[in-house]
Structure formats: C-alpha cells, structure tokens
Amino acid sequence: MTTPIIDVRDLRKSYGAIEAVRGISFAVEKGEIFGLLGPNGAGKTTTVEILEGLRRADSGTAVVAGVDVRADPVGVKDRIGVQLQSSAFPEHFTAKEMIELFAIFYRRTVDALALLRAVGLEDKAGQMAEKLSGGQRQRLSIAVAMVNDPQVLFLDEPTTGLDPQARRNLWDLVREIKARGTTVLLTTHYMDEAEVLCDRVAIMDAGRILELDAPRALIGQLLGRGFTKPVVQQQADLEDVFLELTGHALRED
Amino acid sequence: MGQIFRYVAMLLRAYARDRTALFFGFFFPLIFMILFGVLNLGAAARVNVGLVDEANNDDSQRFIATLSRIETFRVSRGERSDEIERLTAGDRDLVLVIPADFRVAPARPGSAVPTLTLYTNSGRPEQGAIGSSIVTQVVDQMSFAVTQTAPVISTKHEEVSGHNLRYVDFLTPGILGMTIMQSGIASVAFPFVVDRQRGVLRRIMATPISRRNFLAAHVLQRLVTLVIQVLILLGVATLMFKVTVVGSMIALLLVAILGAALFLCLGFAVTGLVATENAVPPVTQLVTLPQMFLSGVFFSKEAAPAFLRPIADYLPLTFLNDALRSVATQGSSLAEIGPQLLGLAAWIVVSFVLAFRFFRLDT
Image (cartoon, rainbow over all chains, first blue to last red; front, side):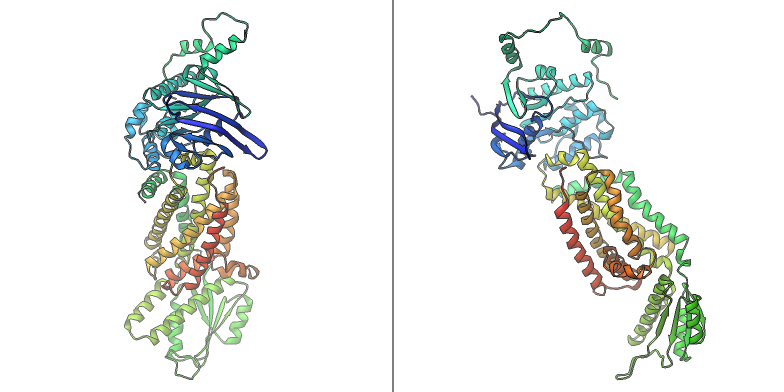
C-alpha cells in the first residue's frame, strides 16, 4: 500500500465551548475523489480548513502531500489548490488576469489561456470575473485553484447554488481533473453528487466520522442490515424531466 | 520583491477600472478645489487693514506701498486711537502700528530692533490670522532682502508678494492635505472591510503569499496613487489658478508621502474596528470631519474656537497642512518645518501601533 496523500490522525478543534471536530482520523489515497459528507455544522468546513493550512488544530496531526500542516502551513498552501465556501475574488480583473494574479501569489508564471481552456472558459478570458454566471465563476474558481499544479484539490461545496446543467458540467470537470492524476477532496451535502463522483466518502456528524467507505459499499451495508423503504418503481425523476425539457447544454446567463 | 511589484502592477490595473475609487480619489478633491478657487472664498478672506504710520519716513512709505499691493488687503490709514476704535467696531480686521523708529536696515549691535504692533479683531479670527501671516511674510522678506546682499533677493520678493498671497495659494496645500487624509483612510478602510466581508481576503490567505508581502503591495499601490493625486491637484492649481509652489517639489512630495503613511495606518486601524461596510462611513467621518474644520483646510486653523485650539494644534492634519503650506507658500526647507515633521512622525508611530493592534485580515 502506498503512503496516503492526506493522513489525518485524531484531529480536534474547538471554538470556545463548541467542539467542532472531535478527534477524527482518515486517509485519502493518491488519485481518488474523496467526499466529506454531513449536514450543516457537522465539522466538514473546519476539517477542510485545517487541512488547507487556514486554521490550526487544537491537537492531532494532519499530513497533506507530505507536509505537516501544523508545522508548515505555507508549504501545504504551495502544494494544494483550494476552492473555499463563501469566498469571492477581488474585483475589476478579467478571468485571464485572475489566473495571472493568483499565479503571482504562488510566484509562478502560467499559461492562463490553457487553464481557462481546461475549464471551458477560454472564450470568457477577457470578461470581468464578477460578470460571469454562477457556474462559470465556479469553473474559474477551479482554474484559479489549479495555477500551482496542485497535488490535491480541495472543493468545499462546489455545486451549491448551481442549476442542474451547471452541476453536471462541474462533475465532468472534476472527473477530468481526477483523470489527470490530481487527488480531489470535496465536501457536499448532496448525496447524489457524492454517489456519482466519489470513490470513497466519510460521513460526518457533530464533529465525528460515523462511516467511511465507498458509496456502493455503504449502501450495501445498510441493505445488509435489513433496511427497506417503500419502493415506487420509477424509471425517471423530476430532474430527468427538467433536463429532458431544458437540455444538458450549459446556460451562459 | 518581484512578487510585491507584480502584485502592485495588478492592483494599479484594477484601481484604474474602479470608477468609485477614481471619483473619490481624483474628481472629488478637484471639485473642492475648483469650487473654493473659482468662487474665490478669498472674498471672505479679504482683510481690512488699518495702518498707523508713526514713522512717516521713506522706509515706512515703501512698506505701506508693498502692503497696499497685496490683493487680499484693503488698506486704510489713520491715527492709532481712531483705528483701534474701528477695529473694535468691526470695520477693521487688523490694525498695524508702524513705530516712529521704523527703518529697514541691519540692526546696529546693541540698539533695539523696531517693533511692529499688530492688533487683531478676535471676532474675525480667520481674517486676523491670514492678515498677520501675510504681514509677517512681508516683514520677513523685507528684512531678508536687507540682511542678505543683492538684487536676486529683491526679484524673489516681488514674485512672492505678487503671486503668493492670494486665497488659492493658501487653499491649495489645504486641499492637498485634505485629499491625503481622506484618500489615505478611505482607500484602505472601504476595500479591506468589503473584501474581508466577501471572503476575498480569506481566499488570498489560502495561497502561500505572506501577509507582509500582501500588505506591502497594498500600501505601495496606495502611495503610488496618492502621489499621482497630489501631482494632478498641483497641476490643476498651477494651470487653472496660477498657483506657484515656492518651495521644492521634492520636499512637498516627501511631506505628502509622510502624511499618506500616517493616514493609511489610520485606515488600517479603522478597518479593524468595524465589521461591516455600513459602519465604515460613520467611523471615518468621526476621524476626518473634525480635522477638516479644525486643521486649516479652507481657512486658517486660527479660525477654530479658542477652547478647541489646544486640540486643533495637535491634530494629525494640522501638522500635515502646516508643513505643506509652509513649503508651498513660504518655500520652507525640510529643516524649517522640523517641528511639523516631528509631529507627523509622532502620529505615524501612534497610528502604526493602532493599526498593528486592531487590523485583522480574517473575520
């Protein structure tokens, strides 16, 4: 077995009296898409922000891409790409300039157009980033996260607020990134998203990991425990109707 | 360093596209300048001078002739008792008594120097202040012309008394000081509070750029735009209002940069004290408004009510305005404005400590 690219051991973090993360351990293998699932307030974002070097854990260790996060947060930042929840880009830059701007933060020079092409935004290179649609902005945000050619890409609720077309488009993009050999750690509270994208998922609640396995395996375990639900044999759902009517093509609003 | 400069270049590019910032940074101070300059609120600063000539010799005649040529002055002559009475009545802003022993010559060792007596009307403080500073300048120049050798000095004297004593000349350094204060604070407080709220700073801090380089680039970009602002304002003042900067431009810019450093620090401190964009204007107004009125932007700071004077004298903008004005209108060297520079330096230390204590990048 190879060394995991993310190795978390007994991580804890409290804000005052609130224990956001209560001793979690998990490992992410190189090249997989790993999902952190859980309801709001489960501790997903805190966990991810510790791994990204943005917050300090109270105790426990986390090694990301060979770097101890606590000892060298800047070293970690240099090796990973991030897309943060509820963050924004500085204003008055075009999509292409945004890539160049972030390249400065990593002291790198990049082919901005190639990165935009990879996320399907080449024709928006000259457009002001704040004028892009929600889905386009998420894709730009992923392109920006790739400027340092990261070993691990962190996506915090990447599809929240997107329409079904844009969600599917983003899923394709994440799969392409995986195909290029980048490890992806994403958080989401959409189970369909986790099911189609993730190789393995950890389900968190109240600061603890409850289960960790491949989505299929978790479903199998549940059924094995005798779980049943009233089955309505339905070959399609409302989302299928929506996509059938409006098409899979991306909307450039 | 390369990282800082590349980032500064990007910040300047974004700044050039930011219409709000451009409006408040460039257009707004120009409006002030043009409004006050064209309306020539110098009319309000027209000073009624009563002259009492007890010497009545060639030197005193020459002195009176010089004073009479000054645009700001409306000169009348009379007896001491009559003039003092008119001063009390408010018909005069200033009464100047030329003593019987008045002469413009190097003082003989041991003998007393002739002393001019200035009476001002405490009810019209700004006229009194403008008037007495002009008289002091004229006297300085006359004695300078005598104690130094030479025709060189006398031409300078003409130029100074011809151009340099109008209201716009007084106003221009005040507008510069005001702009440096407002831009310095606003150009930091607004963007940083907004960017912090929107999560922009968090996103940038998720990259390996150090806080030090990040802040250095932002400060440097502000200093560059402030210098451009100052140059544009001076350009307009020179071309539209024929303002002459008597002192060195380098000295003026150095003072401006010191002032900018001070108010940028205050801006960073303010950023730490407010949580939301809506709270920025009241807090910045609280800092800037009193200084606009007490620190001698539009009128002499002597115009401030007497009980506020002790405070007004030590406000950051007072030091900045006095230093700028002294260089621009009297040609003072950096050494001559030492006390003001010291005041600015003290405030820079104070505001840096405040900024260091209160500024934060994260919510």
